[in-house]
Image (cartoon, rainbow, N blue to C red; front, side, top):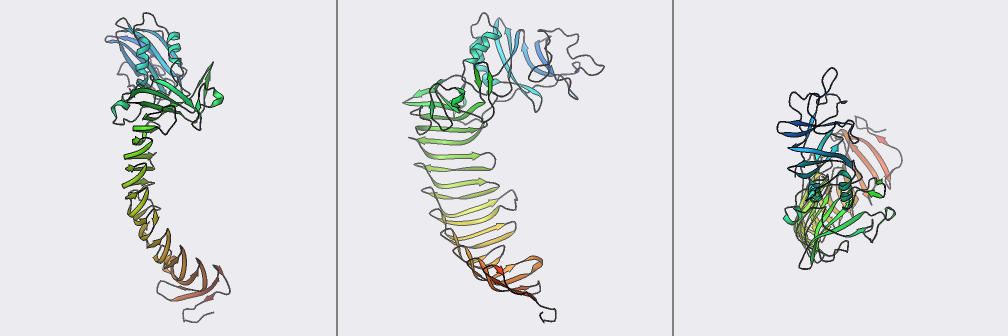
Length: 447
């Protein structure tokens, strides 16, 4: 679904500026002019034109302001324009009009970032049900009807899942199952003090399974209007379940999870456990795709995290064999190369290049063992600690030779310049510089 973005007026409807006529001047209005809209401070005018009534709005106190089209209402009469809050975000603007002797209602949200109004199309099915067959309708009746709906932020547009029965849902319908607290406990008759973080509705039943939608409210502020407490609810998950009252655990069939309207997980369940192909993502920094068998990752998987892609196999939910790493974002702290796993632990050869520096060697049970080439230098590891003689790389092309015991320098350290000439000698005990430092003169003598 697409936003109905308002477009700029054509020539002849210039916005009111210093010394210029107002955009509605000498126009025939279909409804009294509305100035200083609460949600936007805009001026709203419904103008009769040859093709019918069009609504225009202008925030004329802004630099370079110009009137924009709110909507084309066709051959219509504008009956009422009013405001109502459906969630804890900005209120929704409604226009009630009659077209071909039938009532219609459109709803709009104002975006303070781009200063534009857009039609709330996801709410339209609920509005059409309110107007169906009505001989008389007013703002108060519409508000009463809308207040009976379960709360929801209708401005969100949800990424299509490719599952027709999911993508065609009208979230304003369905049967309420229960509200739930922060820790997924059912709330039979929630009050604001109960902090209802979730609620669930059912939409279909098929062979003992229910098509459910779980809604979650953002952890932002609440809005209290009279006896109504509004939250910013949005869709969290759509799934088939056998026991809808349980918050989780009875999924059986296709499932799609959302985060701010984008799909964060998609796959299938069998009796509450994941099976078959799945894709999972968390914002733009993490995504993974592969297969599940009886709730455990199995077979080939691809994982993207912080600019790094890992490809390899899982067996019984544990990494096995060679996992290839690659980096496409050129971040210095991201590696390319490979690592070897046995039953989820690093075991075997590893080779990683980080910011142009290659580190290679072997792991045994997640610990570095034996000879390693690293950014710091070359030498041996014992149980992940530097051990024995090492050659270290330092600044300006210098190298140092020193012995390590349990990861700490021990004994004599010799520093050589880029030409291999000895420059000084130091002594260490348990990683701490101990004794005098002996500098070597150019002639080979020391002092």
